[in-house]
Each structure stands twice: as structure tokens, then as C-alpha cells.
Length: 71
Image (cartoon, rainbow, N blue to C red; front, side, top):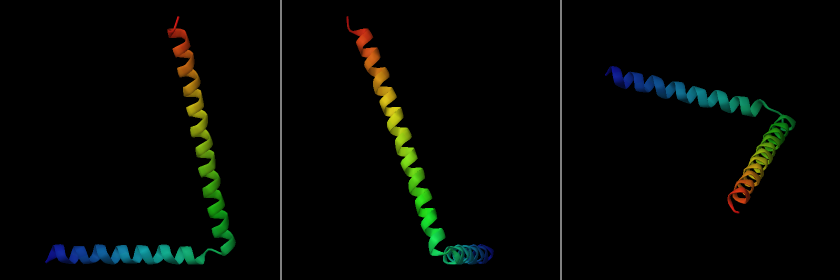
């Protein structure tokens, strides 16, 4: 019986959490949502650039190693 009531409490907490999160989303204006999307895409673009730079550096260092190894 105790486990059943604790499961019910957990379900209610989860429902309230989802409801509160939904209210927060609804409370944002269209401009704020657009800014959030832009911020997210800008950060994704930055991450992609960083990854590309790392890959280029690793390719360059690999090429240097290979050129040193071959006589």
C-alpha cells in the first residue's frame, strides 16, 4: 500500500512539473522564443566551427608525422 501511494505522489509531482514547464514556455513572448532559437543556433554554429578547427589541426599534425616518418 505504501509503495502504491508513493508511486501516486511521484506521478503527481511529475504532472505538476510538466504543467509548470508548459506554463513557463507559454509565458514567453514570440520575440523571446525567437531570440532563444537564434542563441541556440548560434551556439551550435560555434560548436561546429570549433570541431572543424580541431579536425583541421589534427589532420595537419598527422600529415607532419607522416612526412617525418617517410624518408
